[in-house]
Image (cartoon, rainbow, N blue to C red):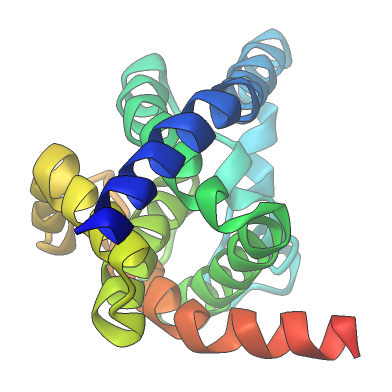
Length: 197
């Protein structure tokens, strides 16, 4: 019981400390969006364009571009919470997991998604969500269980994003992002070990 209490105390303390970083991450997306507006939305060209050579750059850049304020606003709320929770595992885990999710999601979207321009951080958001849930199931530590429970309690509705939705929404990025998050549970620790050694 004392372990759970200690973990809750650590969770609260770490979460408060991570709020600034979460705000910076989300704030950066808003800055990019305003730049995109000033440029006449030309940054959409940096989205993933499936099976086109000129769309390959979007594999890396697509999460940073959003089509409209509503798109970015709803992503921002979930991302703020998820970044804060993921940072509890430490900055190396956060950075590597983010990179793994972005790359895997981007590659899968480029290979298999519908034609068009796929933009937005929704895939990364889904990747963070499934990473925290899968990590709780696989590692079964009390801290991972706490983080997984918080994901379900506050953001359980994100699972609906895995279903095909209205035209203009890249539900493929949602699905591939979710798969990338699960893959990151296994890949991130391997990369960390390689870097340390």
